[in-house]
Length: 390
Image (cartoon, rainbow, N blue to C red; front, side, top):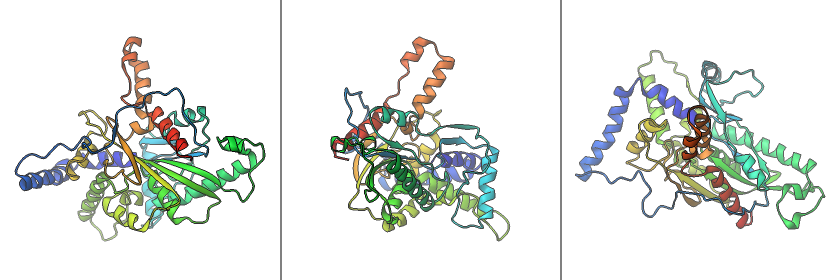
């Protein structure tokens, strides 16, 4: 989703007067004409919403007895690309043109690459925090800009490989956190390793596809917890796709190949209606979800995308990329307040720590605290899974 954020900024600013004002204000005007008065402010959770403003540290956390898999979103990999380099952008366009408009848009892991202008680890500190509490954690890397199906197929292949590796090299007590499995013996080949998937953003769609549409598995998914996944699409994707279509109309020539990954189109609200009809939940899997929202200041990186969503959705609460309503799937567990799309993977903690070391005195550093401790958030998810027997 962060690539989508960057793409939005690259496309929207040159065309702000041409498209942004007309389309965004069109929503505002139509709403005011219908109601005859000002709209209620729904940018914060409604009273009936479950909202969460803190995750206090607890004395003890339980670890789920089954391994956890952390599944990244769009633009994610070992690192999350915040600002692509020229190499990344030209490589994406070249691969799209070579694909001749096909749906495949997979990056070759073995291909020589350079670094992006700005990239950071995706799950900052999350794996380490969970492992300290006794969790077995797997972090797969799927194609950063692949389609949902491509990413899901890759995720499946990685899980097959990783669970087979665990079966061959680890004992039951090393895999599971359960007194009943306090054994040094290896798992039998016919024993599927059970997994708890935790997915951020688009990663949740990959997981849903894997669970519902890939049937031959030697592992078993017990639960899926999605965090700010656009289950019903993102208005930012709608906006970017509309911009691309507008550009195509004024581009000369009859051949107009896709210049961007199919994943961008698959995050639109229209496509997700189709996806949801054809990707039914597995009754044997437990589904949980969290959303997030915040009120941005003008200098926030998500200020413009937040505004786009706010207007195009009729004023819905959002995290700068996904509305709270779109993030709901299965057992909805709540909305993290004052939290944007990147905060959910601990980006704020990392940035504040690095900046404070460089520019702030030690006294000033102690005054900077994230509103929600995101690492504790993931400990709470793990603890909740453990209490439910996963």
